[in-house]
Length: 108
Image 1 (cartoon, one colour):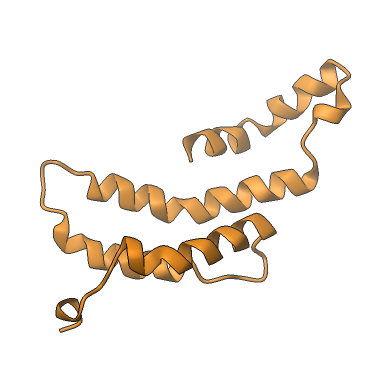
Image 2 (spheres, rainbow, N blue to C red; image 1 turned 180 degrees about the horizontal axis):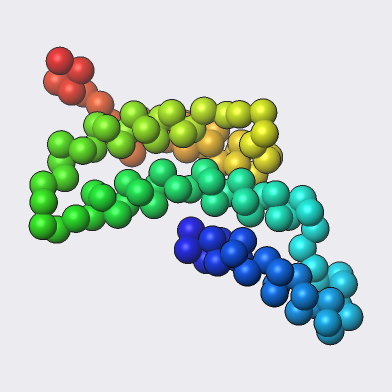
């Protein structure tokens, strides 16, 4: 996540480097940039959940259900999602119940 955010932030320099060396085949296409930006947007909820649930100075167990709901919502496919993100969402949706299982006692 941090690496992808850095790539987006430094796009101008990243594009300039292969151009300066005349290695145009190494440059990222507009579609590549769209994928990277789409991935950054999609992964934000996971960064947030990881940071909050990794807290060592406060209880986090009560936050798991909240983040499960947010993650489930984030896995909804949108028309502007690139194919890479759509595929990630599909695969993550399939394993959500395994990774963040809800028993009947959680529903009451």
